[in-house]
Length: 422
Ligand code: C6P
Image 1 (cartoon, rainbow, N blue to C red):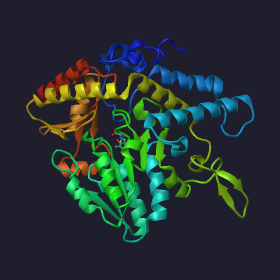
Image 2: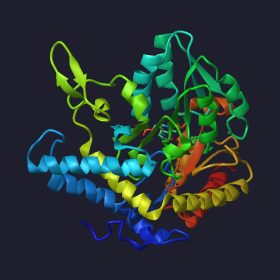
Image 3: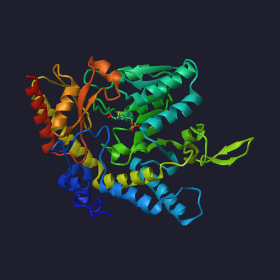
Image 4: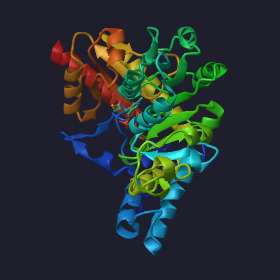
């Protein structure tokens, strides 16, 4: 195991105040490399985050010393792997402040979490004429699964509009809620605009009509403290790889009463308590939704990632990223021709922009030559681009290890873009 295992690093456990970013950066081996002969400036954290040594070590340790299948074996390694996997579930429960681990389902990522709810809750509860209500700022993962199930059930997908700043039109949202609404599915933080949605208010409005709410937390879990009990949301999903954990693992939280009533998502091993050719009795929660051998290493790695971010503290991470976002917004606004897309009052970690007539891909390619990684394109949110009448944006997105110097490098890089196109 490496000496830099994160949790004992002073940056990670500093008691209060600003993050000791330089120390934190040493926990992330990938950040010290040069790309294109320049120091790497990684500003594509909304797509995926880099992994601290603590997570890499947890994966290594698992495969070197703990690997075994879970919930099956009577032998030592199977017991160890099972215990680690279930401990990771408990860590996720704490991270989301869920009431019970039976409400924490391991899935592949936010995409699978949403598909699970669409294919189980949706299939069981939607009939012709019913409606699913989403917003105009959703990622494709929170649009297409609903279109699929609505098509199948002759139900209707309704879309609450957003205003020019990228904020939800709450009045219009409320008006779209009706006795026909069977589910609200909404993002907590927009990946294309950075908008933070008022989830508690949304849940309250939906619950007045007894409509459950699914929250897509892919972009909030890494940036804000999340408390599913205080939000009172019915489902919440996020991806491990965006919270400094591995790819291929994610979480669906659901209130136990709802999950209990839902049919399973997939059939197979582990999701049953008994099988005969005549009848199968399903396993209890959460195993009913975890058919087959799961991503054991991924779950353990996610547990390590949660330990890592909790040791730093989500409040402090949020404050640090807010500081980076404010600095970046001011720096880019000062450059003539830059238009920031998404100017909501409450934003997290994401700065999308267009630069005059220059195509965002050109902006990204020139920045890449400077070692600066951003994402360009529609960000899997084509309806957001259509809303603003643009094909794409350039998007810088921040993580806990980013520095003001990196934000300055971004602004300098954008300045270079202007010179190239002058
Ligand atoms: N957004 C981005 O660059 P998965 O792919 O399952 O881990 O996450 C899907 C997803 C769902 N909802 C939101 C709000 C998201 O931002 C994402 C992933 C990445 O913006 C990759 S497209």
